[in-house]
Every structure is written in C-alpha cells, then in structure tokens.
Length: 217
Image 1 (cartoon, one colour):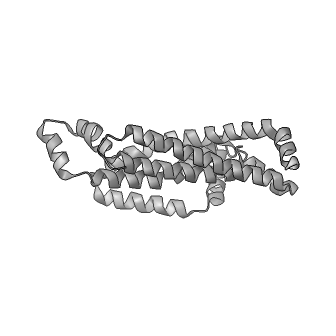
Image 2 (image 1 turned 180 degrees about the vertical axis):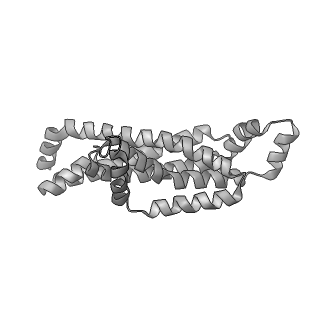
Image 3 (image 1 turned 60 degrees about the vertical axis):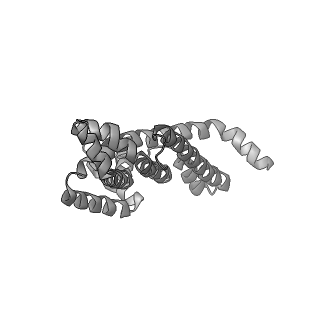
C-alpha cells in the first residue's frame, strides 16, 4: 500500500493532466457525434431504405479494430500535417459513436405512438415543431441510452489514442507496458474505469432531467 501511495504522490500531476486530456478528447467527440448522429437518425425515419444502408455501414464500421481505424486515419490526415495526434483520434471516436446514437435515435423516433403523432398534427403542429416538442421528448430515454453507450465505448477506445500521440489516460498504460511498470498500468486502467462510471452516472442524471414526467425510463 505504501508503494501505491508513493506512486500516486509522485505521479498525481501527470495523472490529472492525462485525465483532462481524455475528458476533452472524448467530450468533444461526443458533442460532434451527437450533432451528427441524432440529426441523421431523425432524418432516416423518413427514408427506410437509406436507414437500412446507413445502419449497416455504421455496424461494419464498429467491427473495425480500434487500432486499425486509428492507423487508417494517419495517411488521410497526413495530407494536412495532422497524421498523428488529436485530430485523427477525434475523428475515429466520432465514427465509433455513430452506430449507437443513430440506431437508438432512429428506433426511438420510429416507435413513437402514432396516435400521439396524429394528435400533434391535429392541433396544427408543423413537422419540425412535432419533432422537437413531441417526438424527441418521447424518445429521449432511448436516445440517451445510445449516447451513454457511445460515451462508455469511447472512453475505453480513447485509451488506444495514446498510440498515435493523442494523449489521455492511455499514456499511463502505454508507459506501463513500455517500462514494465504494473503501477502505471493499473492506475491507468482504474482511472479509465472510474471515468466511465462517472460519465455514465452524469448522463443518466441528465437523461432523467430531460425526460418528461410520465414516460418510462
């Protein structure tokens, strides 16, 4: 135990900095992924054929090993001198986020009770008003479930970003593997796990606040 305390005292600043880097990377990726995924999921409810194609493509994308996808990003972003580092890692995390967000948004909107949709039309709501005021609030629990899945997934995958120089908590694990330092490996793994738990709890709280009363969560 004394060795652990000593390790944490020596590396406290580095661990905090890496945690901040990890949060910034995953957080920015989530914001971009939500903007793209939710908008696309809503649009796909109007085109079932396109929806099937997009969801299949997103499913295939998710099967690509994370280290391979990070590697694929390097030659593309080398064109703009961003082959390694934050930009390719951010892009890869945005891509990995799409399947759960798009699928849950699409499924949730499609499963809104048709009677509720008809009632909204009956009182004169336009399509955009109906989506924003009726369908999205009704679908919020399922949409948020997809976002929570994407966040936990990306916090874990974000560890691999350290291999292309994007920083984050993966740096602890990489250093531990390189130096044969078990304290660094365990510290990185525990920090990533705690971050995922905290992020999921925070998003669940937001989900409860955004979901109208009377809707099952």
